[in-house]
Length: 252
Image 1 (tube, rainbow, N blue to C red):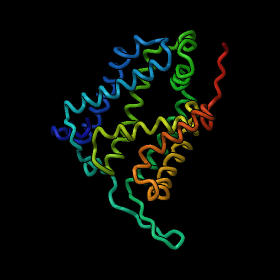
Image 2: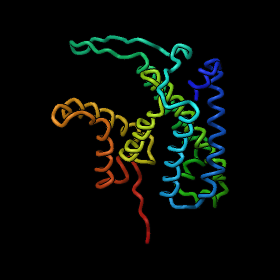
Image 3: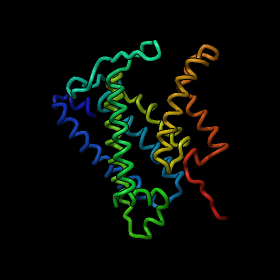
Image 4: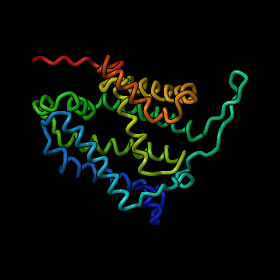
């Protein structure tokens, strides 16, 4: 949406603001059309519904903006370019400036979200809804408002992530493959733990690179496309709550 608006002649920073507006309208629409009729349905129903939303939005976006990759407006958003060379242990390590900026921004987003979920009224309401819809409703929390906030917040995070990732390569709807890596990361770290998500992301990222380097020559390339899900499958079998997640006990 951001790149498409810019190609239509909208100034870069105005395009960012308009994209946020699109995110908000999208959040309201999803809550009204999809999520509200599914209140108190099993979690797997909501999970599959959100997957359906994902592929619908991809098809809808391709119909409007086309399926060809587009170049991120890096210069217009004043994003850093180039690399920094560092000597470490006698070797030369090259770090892309955009990667350093992405790491800093990601750290700030994690800190802000952690404080938001822990110390604000809305953040605690979000955690309550995530824990139990029925319990949240019983204490007067509006699921409709919470779901709009959740989807709008997710849209903001996705916009920032898409900008930083798109600055490294072209922007396309194939970025969904990167977004889906969040699922094994959450399975690994635990769905209820922010530190778990950080640790899970590091394990998946480092594991993919090491696997590609050491196992790639033996079994062929493409390890990065499936290793995360293989690790997640192992955790689902032997530790389904993840490294830092709460163990759920259901009474029958």
